[in-house]
Length: 385
Image (cartoon, rainbow, N blue to C red; front, side, top):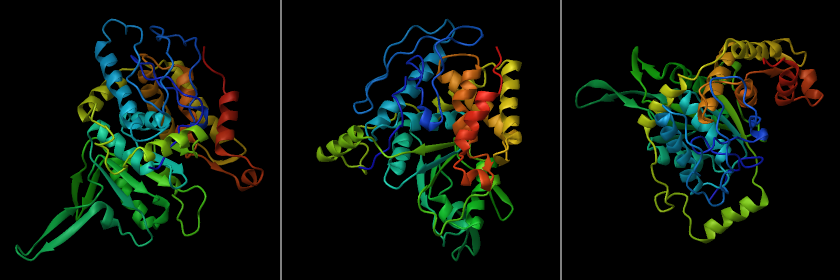
């Protein structure tokens, strides 16, 4: 069994089970105890169970009156993490990121060395959400039609018929996407933006939900084709999967010794605890999360500050600002609130923006990273009160 680690301290679960707070290394930071001004304070989160032995979501304070539907949906999504934990060790932060992407109908770029359970993570998530999933190994000889599908001649009818490619699924794992030439990388642009594939002038809609989860190897760049800025900007989040800590890796080996088979998720006990309808209802609830004009201004100020940074040759675009707003709203809803705080924006700034900025060569030589620049920007931009 391969393995994925959610870096940093363990996080709380979403309300009505407490909302999970992904670790700072993943680009998230848990909000402070005192809530920002809004319609109502959020319930205090309780500690989450150990990722090595996932349990059912813990009981939490009663949700506000009229919020029973949202509370039930959050409970269903919190249970997804426990199900994925039956197959993957230490996955809470990554699962939270993927759920946020699904709630925002966005895509995720995952960076991690081989063997940290990227494929198993996606398969387990799909099984727990009762969604279809397909994996494409991106190689130098992969053609666009191998991804999107193509017209095939049928000798029996003397006509061409469309044969769907692997992109026609709910969760598409684009493994090592930077190992294929730009021509094939570009085959995903329309699918990611328009949720459709056009072949021979005919648009063909993709299933809903549709999310691309693309992976990159951070240590081996020989024979790779870096993603252009226009395609990077289409990814809602970028998450980084480091190697596991000792105790987590021991748990991985213990599960293997007990007979765990990563190819048999049903035997591991992974079952569907939510579905596409639950995600659709949750997205409708996220759309009702309110954002004060001062918070909107804060999002704009953070993104505008990256455009003025002397360390960056490319700052965050307006699309990046809308992405940060969307992820902050999803995070606020998962946290059990009906309003966005500046702390929600800070919590999602790093994973939402770090792949949308470009460092100057001289800054790279000095050891500056996109993460350190964003942290400096967040520290400098005034927070609305």
